[in-house]
Amino acid sequence: MTHLLFSQSIILCKKAKIKKEKMDYYKKIKNELTNNDNEINNIFDNIKDLVINSRNKVYQTVNTEMLNLYWNIGKAIMEIQQGDERASYGDSVLDKLSQKLTNEFGKGFSKRNLERMRKFYIYFPIATTVSPQLSWSHYLELIKIDEGPKRNFYLKETINSKWSVRELQRQRDSLLYERLTISADKEKILELSEKGQILKTSKDLVKDPFVLEFLDIKENTGYLESDLEKNIIEHLKEFLLELGKGFSYVGNQVRLTLEEDHFYPDLVFYNRLLRCFVIIDLKIGKVSHQDIGQIKMYVNYYDREIKQADENPTVGILLSTNKNETVVKYTLPKDNKTIFSLKNRFIKTLHVVGNIT
Image: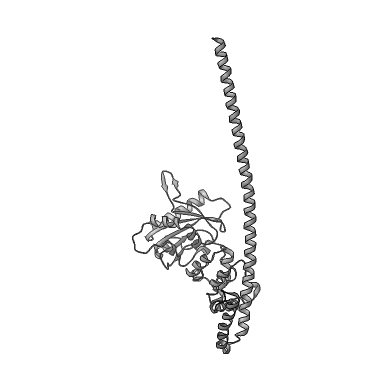
Protein backbone atom coordinates (compact mmCIF):
# COMPACT_ATOMS: atom_id res chain seq x y z
CA MET A 1 0.00 0.00 0.00
CA THR A 2 2.81 2.37 0.93
CA HIS A 3 4.64 1.49 -2.29
CA LEU A 4 1.51 2.31 -4.31
CA LEU A 5 1.11 5.70 -2.66
CA PHE A 6 4.78 6.44 -3.25
CA SER A 7 4.45 5.55 -6.94
CA GLN A 8 1.38 7.76 -7.30
CA SER A 9 3.26 10.64 -5.66
CA ILE A 10 6.10 10.23 -8.13
CA ILE A 11 3.65 10.21 -11.03
CA LEU A 12 1.91 13.35 -9.72
CA CYS A 13 5.25 15.10 -9.31
CA LYS A 14 6.26 14.18 -12.86
CA LYS A 15 2.93 15.47 -14.19
CA ALA A 16 3.33 18.70 -12.22
CA LYS A 17 6.87 19.08 -13.56
CA ILE A 18 5.70 18.46 -17.13
CA LYS A 19 2.85 20.94 -16.68
CA LYS A 20 5.25 23.55 -15.32
CA GLU A 21 7.66 22.96 -18.19
CA LYS A 22 4.83 23.40 -20.67
CA MET A 23 3.71 26.60 -18.95
CA ASP A 24 7.28 27.91 -18.91
CA TYR A 25 7.61 27.03 -22.60
CA TYR A 26 4.36 28.79 -23.54
CA LYS A 27 5.36 31.77 -21.42
CA LYS A 28 8.72 31.90 -23.20
CA ILE A 29 7.00 31.75 -26.60
CA LYS A 30 4.56 34.44 -25.53
CA ASN A 31 7.39 36.69 -24.34
CA GLU A 32 9.26 36.14 -27.58
CA LEU A 33 6.15 37.00 -29.57
CA THR A 34 5.55 40.07 -27.42
CA ASN A 35 9.15 41.18 -27.82
CA ASN A 36 8.85 40.55 -31.54
CA ASP A 37 5.65 42.61 -31.70
CA ASN A 38 7.32 45.42 -29.76
CA GLU A 39 10.29 45.34 -32.13
CA ILE A 40 7.97 45.45 -35.14
CA ASN A 41 6.00 48.31 -33.58
CA ASN A 42 9.22 50.25 -32.98
CA ILE A 43 10.32 49.72 -36.58
CA PHE A 44 6.84 50.71 -37.78
CA ASP A 45 6.90 53.92 -35.71
CA ASN A 46 10.35 54.82 -37.09
CA ILE A 47 9.25 54.23 -40.69
CA LYS A 48 6.01 56.11 -40.06
CA ASP A 49 8.00 59.14 -38.85
CA LEU A 50 10.25 58.93 -41.91
CA VAL A 51 7.26 58.81 -44.28
CA ILE A 52 5.47 61.71 -42.55
CA ASN A 53 8.61 63.87 -42.47
CA SER A 54 9.33 63.11 -46.12
CA ARG A 55 5.77 63.92 -47.16
CA ASN A 56 5.89 67.17 -45.19
CA LYS A 57 9.10 68.15 -46.95
CA VAL A 58 7.59 67.32 -50.34
CA TYR A 59 4.47 69.34 -49.47
CA GLN A 60 6.55 72.31 -48.33
CA THR A 61 8.61 72.21 -51.52
CA VAL A 62 5.53 71.93 -53.75
CA ASN A 63 3.71 74.64 -51.77
CA THR A 64 6.67 77.01 -51.98
CA GLU A 65 7.01 76.49 -55.73
CA MET A 66 3.27 76.97 -56.21
CA LEU A 67 3.27 80.26 -54.30
CA ASN A 68 6.32 81.45 -56.25
CA LEU A 69 4.61 80.51 -59.52
CA TYR A 70 1.36 82.30 -58.70
CA TRP A 71 3.22 85.36 -57.41
CA ASN A 72 5.27 85.60 -60.61
CA ILE A 73 2.18 85.09 -62.79
CA GLY A 74 0.51 87.92 -60.87
CA LYS A 75 3.55 90.10 -61.43
CA ALA A 76 3.56 89.33 -65.16
CA ILE A 77 -0.15 90.20 -65.42
CA MET A 78 0.41 93.50 -63.60
CA GLU A 79 3.13 94.40 -66.08
CA ILE A 80 0.53 93.95 -68.82
CA GLN A 81 -2.14 95.98 -67.03
CA GLN A 82 -0.24 99.19 -66.45
CA GLY A 83 -2.63 101.83 -65.13
CA ASP A 84 -6.36 102.38 -65.34
CA GLU A 85 -6.24 103.47 -68.95
CA ARG A 86 -5.23 99.96 -69.95
CA ALA A 87 -7.71 98.14 -67.70
CA SER A 88 -10.13 97.20 -70.49
CA TYR A 89 -7.24 96.11 -72.68
CA GLY A 90 -5.77 94.10 -69.81
CA ASP A 91 -9.13 92.48 -69.18
CA SER A 92 -9.31 91.19 -72.72
CA VAL A 93 -5.73 89.97 -72.39
CA LEU A 94 -6.76 87.93 -69.35
CA ASP A 95 -9.49 86.21 -71.35
CA LYS A 96 -7.08 85.22 -74.12
CA LEU A 97 -4.30 84.35 -71.68
CA SER A 98 -6.62 82.13 -69.66
CA GLN A 99 -7.73 80.27 -72.77
CA LYS A 100 -4.18 79.66 -73.99
CA LEU A 101 -2.89 78.55 -70.56
CA THR A 102 -5.84 76.21 -70.05
CA ASN A 103 -5.31 74.65 -73.46
CA GLU A 104 -1.63 74.13 -72.68
CA PHE A 105 -1.73 73.09 -68.99
CA GLY A 106 -5.33 72.21 -68.15
CA LYS A 107 -7.29 73.41 -65.13
CA GLY A 108 -6.12 76.11 -62.72
CA PHE A 109 -5.78 79.04 -65.12
CA SER A 110 -9.31 80.36 -65.39
CA LYS A 111 -9.75 84.11 -65.70
CA ARG A 112 -10.92 84.22 -62.10
CA ASN A 113 -7.78 82.45 -60.89
CA LEU A 114 -5.57 84.76 -62.91
CA GLU A 115 -7.31 87.72 -61.29
CA ARG A 116 -6.60 86.17 -57.90
CA MET A 117 -2.92 85.80 -58.77
CA ARG A 118 -2.83 89.43 -59.80
CA LYS A 119 -4.42 90.45 -56.50
CA PHE A 120 -1.97 88.19 -54.66
CA TYR A 121 0.92 90.12 -56.19
CA ILE A 122 -0.73 93.51 -55.53
CA TYR A 123 -1.25 92.77 -51.82
CA PHE A 124 2.11 91.04 -51.36
CA PRO A 125 4.41 92.87 -53.80
CA ILE A 126 7.61 91.83 -52.00
CA ALA A 127 8.35 88.18 -52.72
CA THR A 128 10.20 87.62 -49.44
CA THR A 129 7.07 88.51 -47.45
CA VAL A 130 5.20 85.52 -48.89
CA SER A 131 5.33 82.86 -46.19
CA PRO A 132 5.79 79.21 -47.24
CA GLN A 133 4.14 78.26 -43.95
CA LEU A 134 0.79 79.19 -45.50
CA SER A 135 -0.94 77.48 -48.37
CA TRP A 136 -2.43 79.05 -51.47
CA SER A 137 -5.85 78.46 -49.86
CA HIS A 138 -4.77 80.61 -46.91
CA TYR A 139 -3.74 83.41 -49.26
CA LEU A 140 -7.04 83.17 -51.13
CA GLU A 141 -8.75 84.05 -47.85
CA LEU A 142 -6.26 86.79 -46.99
CA ILE A 143 -6.62 88.62 -50.32
CA LYS A 144 -10.34 88.96 -49.64
CA ILE A 145 -9.36 91.51 -46.97
CA ASP A 146 -8.81 94.90 -48.59
CA GLU A 147 -7.56 96.81 -45.53
CA GLY A 148 -3.80 96.44 -45.20
CA PRO A 149 -3.47 96.52 -41.36
CA LYS A 150 -6.34 94.06 -40.94
CA ARG A 151 -4.96 91.72 -43.61
CA ASN A 152 -1.52 91.83 -42.01
CA PHE A 153 -3.02 91.04 -38.61
CA TYR A 154 -4.70 87.90 -39.95
CA LEU A 155 -1.50 86.97 -41.78
CA LYS A 156 0.54 87.18 -38.55
CA GLU A 157 -2.10 85.36 -36.49
CA THR A 158 -2.44 82.55 -39.03
CA ILE A 159 1.32 81.98 -38.97
CA ASN A 160 1.76 82.40 -35.20
CA SER A 161 -1.29 80.33 -34.21
CA LYS A 162 -0.97 77.84 -37.07
CA TRP A 163 -4.59 78.35 -38.09
CA SER A 164 -6.09 76.03 -40.65
CA VAL A 165 -7.93 77.63 -43.56
CA ARG A 166 -11.24 76.97 -41.81
CA GLU A 167 -9.99 78.55 -38.57
CA LEU A 168 -8.80 81.61 -40.49
CA GLN A 169 -12.21 81.90 -42.15
CA ARG A 170 -13.97 81.61 -38.82
CA GLN A 171 -11.83 84.24 -37.09
CA ARG A 172 -12.19 86.66 -39.98
CA ASP A 173 -15.94 86.14 -40.31
CA SER A 174 -16.42 86.57 -36.55
CA LEU A 175 -14.66 89.96 -36.84
CA LEU A 176 -11.81 89.10 -34.49
CA TYR A 177 -9.74 92.10 -35.58
CA GLU A 178 -12.62 94.52 -35.04
CA ARG A 179 -13.40 93.01 -31.65
CA LEU A 180 -9.81 93.40 -30.51
CA THR A 181 -9.42 96.96 -31.80
CA ILE A 182 -12.81 98.47 -30.91
CA SER A 183 -11.46 100.07 -27.72
CA ALA A 184 -7.74 100.00 -28.55
CA ASP A 185 -5.55 103.06 -29.03
CA LYS A 186 -3.54 103.67 -32.20
CA GLU A 187 -0.40 102.17 -30.70
CA LYS A 188 -2.22 98.95 -29.82
CA ILE A 189 -3.83 98.73 -33.28
CA LEU A 190 -0.42 99.20 -34.92
CA GLU A 191 1.04 96.45 -32.70
CA LEU A 192 -1.79 94.09 -33.69
CA SER A 193 -1.10 94.77 -37.36
CA GLU A 194 2.66 94.31 -37.11
CA LYS A 195 2.91 91.44 -34.62
CA GLY A 196 -0.55 89.89 -34.27
CA GLN A 197 -2.19 89.41 -30.88
CA ILE A 198 0.27 89.36 -27.98
CA LEU A 199 -0.94 88.39 -24.52
CA LYS A 200 0.69 90.51 -21.83
CA THR A 201 -2.16 91.13 -19.36
CA SER A 202 -5.68 89.85 -18.75
CA LYS A 203 -6.99 92.78 -20.77
CA ASP A 204 -5.46 91.22 -23.87
CA LEU A 205 -7.95 88.35 -23.50
CA VAL A 206 -10.81 90.72 -24.22
CA LYS A 207 -12.79 90.60 -27.43
CA ASP A 208 -15.77 92.84 -28.08
CA PRO A 209 -18.03 91.01 -28.61
CA PHE A 210 -17.35 87.42 -27.54
CA VAL A 211 -18.76 85.31 -30.37
CA LEU A 212 -20.02 81.74 -29.86
CA GLU A 213 -21.94 81.21 -33.07
CA PHE A 214 -20.58 77.67 -33.40
CA LEU A 215 -22.77 76.55 -30.48
CA ASP A 216 -25.80 76.91 -32.74
CA ILE A 217 -28.00 78.10 -29.87
CA LYS A 218 -30.72 80.59 -30.71
CA GLU A 219 -31.59 83.38 -28.33
CA ASN A 220 -34.83 83.28 -26.34
CA THR A 221 -35.28 79.53 -26.76
CA GLY A 222 -35.40 78.70 -23.06
CA TYR A 223 -32.10 76.84 -22.85
CA LEU A 224 -30.49 76.31 -19.45
CA GLU A 225 -27.00 77.07 -18.17
CA SER A 226 -26.34 73.32 -18.04
CA ASP A 227 -27.31 73.10 -21.74
CA LEU A 228 -24.86 75.88 -22.56
CA GLU A 229 -22.08 74.20 -20.59
CA LYS A 230 -22.72 70.85 -22.27
CA ASN A 231 -22.73 72.52 -25.69
CA ILE A 232 -19.41 74.23 -24.99
CA ILE A 233 -17.80 70.96 -23.91
CA GLU A 234 -19.05 69.32 -27.12
CA HIS A 235 -17.48 72.17 -29.13
CA LEU A 236 -14.37 72.56 -26.97
CA LYS A 237 -11.98 72.94 -29.91
CA GLU A 238 -14.02 75.83 -31.33
CA PHE A 239 -14.39 77.38 -27.88
CA LEU A 240 -10.63 77.27 -27.31
CA LEU A 241 -10.14 78.95 -30.67
CA GLU A 242 -12.50 81.76 -29.64
CA LEU A 243 -10.79 82.12 -26.26
CA GLY A 244 -7.52 82.76 -28.05
CA LYS A 245 -3.87 81.86 -27.64
CA GLY A 246 -2.35 79.70 -24.95
CA PHE A 247 -5.48 78.14 -23.46
CA SER A 248 -5.71 74.56 -22.26
CA TYR A 249 -8.74 72.89 -20.74
CA VAL A 250 -8.56 71.88 -17.06
CA GLY A 251 -12.09 70.70 -16.33
CA ASN A 252 -15.76 71.50 -15.81
CA GLN A 253 -17.77 71.52 -12.59
CA VAL A 254 -14.52 71.43 -10.63
CA ARG A 255 -15.49 71.14 -6.97
CA LEU A 256 -14.31 73.70 -4.42
CA THR A 257 -14.94 72.91 -0.76
CA LEU A 258 -15.19 75.67 1.84
CA GLU A 259 -15.75 74.08 5.23
CA GLU A 260 -18.87 71.95 4.61
CA ASP A 261 -20.07 73.81 1.50
CA HIS A 262 -19.28 72.72 -2.05
CA PHE A 263 -19.09 75.03 -5.08
CA TYR A 264 -18.69 74.14 -8.74
CA PRO A 265 -17.20 76.61 -11.25
CA ASP A 266 -18.57 75.75 -14.69
CA LEU A 267 -15.31 75.75 -16.66
CA VAL A 268 -11.65 76.00 -15.67
CA PHE A 269 -8.81 76.70 -18.12
CA TYR A 270 -5.13 77.54 -17.87
CA ASN A 271 -3.36 80.08 -20.06
CA ARG A 272 0.30 79.14 -20.49
CA LEU A 273 1.23 82.55 -21.97
CA LEU A 274 -0.20 84.58 -19.09
CA ARG A 275 0.64 81.71 -16.72
CA CYS A 276 -2.65 81.88 -14.88
CA PHE A 277 -5.86 79.97 -14.30
CA VAL A 278 -8.97 81.25 -16.07
CA ILE A 279 -12.33 80.41 -14.48
CA ILE A 280 -15.49 80.75 -16.57
CA ASP A 281 -18.94 80.80 -15.04
CA LEU A 282 -22.02 80.72 -17.25
CA LYS A 283 -25.08 82.87 -16.64
CA ILE A 284 -28.44 82.87 -18.39
CA GLY A 285 -30.24 86.18 -17.94
CA LYS A 286 -29.15 89.45 -16.38
CA VAL A 287 -25.95 89.60 -14.34
CA SER A 288 -26.48 90.26 -10.64
CA HIS A 289 -24.12 91.34 -7.88
CA GLN A 290 -24.40 87.80 -6.48
CA ASP A 291 -23.03 86.44 -9.78
CA ILE A 292 -20.09 88.81 -9.60
CA GLY A 293 -19.50 87.94 -5.95
CA GLN A 294 -19.47 84.25 -6.81
CA ILE A 295 -16.92 84.56 -9.60
CA LYS A 296 -14.76 86.71 -7.31
CA MET A 297 -14.91 83.98 -4.66
CA TYR A 298 -13.71 81.42 -7.23
CA VAL A 299 -10.87 83.74 -8.25
CA ASN A 300 -9.84 84.31 -4.63
CA TYR A 301 -9.93 80.58 -3.85
CA TYR A 302 -7.69 79.71 -6.79
CA ASP A 303 -5.30 82.55 -5.94
CA ARG A 304 -4.95 81.40 -2.32
CA GLU A 305 -5.23 77.64 -2.60
CA ILE A 306 -4.39 76.47 -6.13
CA LYS A 307 -1.97 78.72 -8.00
CA GLN A 308 1.77 78.51 -7.43
CA ALA A 309 3.80 81.40 -6.10
CA ASP A 310 5.43 82.04 -9.47
CA GLU A 311 2.11 82.09 -11.37
CA ASN A 312 0.02 85.15 -12.14
CA PRO A 313 -3.30 85.85 -10.38
CA THR A 314 -6.38 84.01 -11.57
CA VAL A 315 -8.78 85.56 -14.09
CA GLY A 316 -12.52 85.08 -13.76
CA ILE A 317 -14.90 85.30 -16.71
CA LEU A 318 -18.63 85.70 -16.25
CA LEU A 319 -20.21 84.69 -19.53
CA SER A 320 -23.77 85.98 -19.73
CA THR A 321 -26.62 86.58 -22.14
CA ASN A 322 -27.61 89.92 -20.61
CA LYS A 323 -24.92 92.21 -19.30
CA ASN A 324 -25.61 94.69 -16.54
CA GLU A 325 -22.84 97.27 -16.71
CA THR A 326 -24.19 99.38 -13.87
CA VAL A 327 -24.20 96.43 -11.47
CA VAL A 328 -20.70 95.46 -12.60
CA LYS A 329 -19.52 99.05 -12.15
CA TYR A 330 -20.76 99.42 -8.59
CA THR A 331 -20.10 95.88 -7.38
CA LEU A 332 -16.38 95.94 -8.12
CA PRO A 333 -13.80 98.45 -6.86
CA LYS A 334 -13.59 101.74 -8.74
CA ASP A 335 -9.88 101.33 -9.43
CA ASN A 336 -10.25 97.79 -10.78
CA LYS A 337 -8.79 97.88 -14.28
CA THR A 338 -9.56 94.29 -15.18
CA ILE A 339 -13.37 94.38 -15.55
CA PHE A 340 -14.55 94.29 -19.16
CA SER A 341 -18.16 94.65 -20.22
CA LEU A 342 -18.48 93.53 -23.83
CA LYS A 343 -21.32 93.61 -26.33
CA ASN A 344 -22.50 90.44 -28.03
CA ARG A 345 -22.96 90.18 -31.78
CA PHE A 346 -24.76 86.86 -31.91
CA ILE A 347 -25.54 85.28 -28.57
CA LYS A 348 -23.27 85.94 -25.66
CA THR A 349 -21.89 88.83 -23.64
CA LEU A 350 -18.75 88.70 -21.57
CA HIS A 351 -17.61 90.22 -18.31
CA VAL A 352 -14.07 89.59 -17.12
CA VAL A 353 -12.89 89.82 -13.54
CA GLY A 354 -9.21 89.40 -12.79
CA ASN A 355 -6.09 90.81 -11.22
CA ILE A 356 -3.32 90.77 -13.81
CA THR A 357 -2.10 94.28 -14.56
